[in-house]
Image (tube, rainbow over all chains, first blue to last red; front, side, top):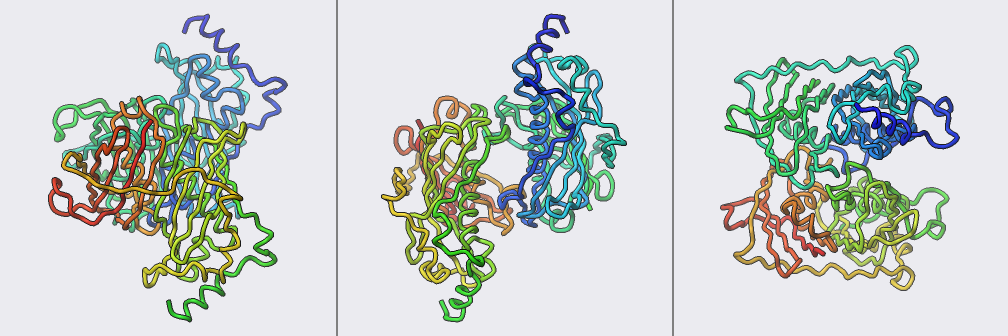
Amino acid sequence: MNTSNHIHLASSLVGREGEESGSVSKIETYSFTVEPFHVDFTGHLFLGILGNHLLNAAGRHSHNRGWGIDQLNEAHYTWVLSRLSIELAETPSQYEHVIIETWVESVMKLFTERNFLIRNADDGRIYGYARSIWAMIDMQTRQPSNLLELKGGDILNYVMSVAEKPCPIEKFNVRVRLTDDATTSTVFTHYSDVDINGHINSVKYIEHILDLFPREQFERHRIHRFDIAYKTESYLGDTLTLQREEASEGTHIIEVRKHVGSKEKPAGEVVVQAKIIWQ
Amino acid sequence: MNTSNHIHLASSLVGREGEESGSVSKIETYSFTVEPFHVDFTGHLFLGILGNHLLNAAGRHSHNRGWGIDQLNEAHYTWVLSRLSIELAETPSQYEHVIIETWVESVMKLFTERNFLIRNADDGRIYGYARSIWAMIDMQTRQPSNLLELKGGDILNYVMSVAEKPCPIEKFNVRVRLTDDATTSTVFTHYSDVDINGHINSVKYIEHILDLFPREQFERHRIHRFDIAYKTESYLGDTLTLQREEASEGTHIIEVRKHVGSKEKPAGEVVVQAKIIWQ
């Protein structure tokens, strides 16, 4: 990364006047009520909608501390979500009031780990937790940038040790190995899938993956854990192939690729990989 | 409607203690911020998301006055949306703060008209208005019920005359006449389309209809007005045929049917009809 960009980054991402990093909490809370059109036919919050709220919470946390996506964009940087893992002991129900807490667990040169706690606002019970991994990309070079230099290292002031703020779910650890038993589906992407950057949005992949499952799956099981790795972007108009296989009882592996060649042997670039553990 | 049901309705939908209808405003306000994943590739709010917020605002207005869907459900009644018309001079953009005001324009025996004003919270500019028509259905008989008897006629206390609260957009007035020039598409319905009642949710129809249009349509035009009539329910697993035709320049008519018979001559029950006026 050239020096002039580095200096440009540091000076353009100055914290708001009068705000010492020590005076802003390390944790951001974000509240929402589970809306009628955001629950599935069992009356529980759609996982994609929860993902959307988690990403909103992440955006608010980073924005309020001076390194949100809009602030990075001014210096031609952006945040890119690399991994998301959601583990729920219970899924929120219609009309429940939910609070998401989010904080930074670690900052390394090329990745930062952000965690989430998801709890009920009224009785405090914990629905579950989530973990995410982010990179900061230089929008001009498309290369990951050194997070330790973001705002002169200020982001490090927000790191919370595991002792300070535990996140008692396992880190992302998914190996995708599909066999000939995998079923393959094709999905066309449309206007409603695409975000302001023209990319299929992170939440829409979750929806398309869950739409692979029949009604009975959701009648008999709930999602205990959902892991997703975002490998590369796809765009409005892309056709995607989704391969799905039950790797072990109650655990499904999914691989989404850009559609190239025959449907039977998907060979396009891997877009996302996911694992679902059902209960 | 038999007398015992009528009495049951009136007594179970008692207003909250201490609340005189005269002490609750006739207008409910509902605020939201336009989130990153709720804008399209042009950076403007998805119409389906706006529809979702309008329906949330309607739910909040009716609930806070004692005749919300949850309160009706206790007496085995429910609200059913029959028509929705949205007319926008401007479409909200990412991060804007929006306020929706909603109120009742009229209550008749079998239908009630509810209007909306959509404005910017910070500078007050008006994005547009919406109109909706609702019926109240007896869930056991599936028959429309007499709205004038709901809560002993209390709903009439919330009616605002056009002079009190104007809604300067035309009422729903859509005639669908498709010719052989109509193009036909097929849509399969999935888990993510369906609400807690097992019905394809009202907003998802709007999304599927807009997904019929190619990227270029949204690059060159914005939606000035969207009218939709909800004729009958469809369910998870239904295949829908969507026929679309440009009735006059910039005006498209859409008819969605349950898929029966051949794709070329859709003959299934009409589910929704819509009209889009582009600018």
